[in-house]
Image (cartoon, rainbow, N blue to C red; front, side):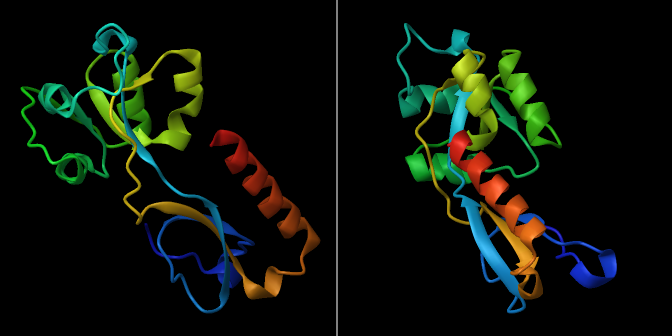
Length: 166
């Protein structure tokens, strides 16, 4: 998470941030959704539709890393050591998702971000969900905006969108 915006000097009414509170005493904070990370891959990686994969098999699969590089923590959570013969390192989560769809390996991403790809069958979940607890998504706004009807409508719309994606 980068530095918080200067709401007044930058002319910003609200911001969406990934992280964990506290964000600042002068801010009103609303949880949009808790991040649940899942390991996803192209359907060809599942044997006879058996998902999630056995952790031992997942340990051997090629890993696609994004800038968050959560694989070491995730594998530790599963109690396994990485045994991949290949790793692909990308700078953005969207690129990691595209690489997974293209069959380049397994990506570890927010379930929210790949919900449509899972529904469309472009990706399958091959590893158990993990809520690591530090990457949830929040809407931040100055407490002075609590009575701004337009800002409240946008916050409510964001909450509705996040509820639909989970």
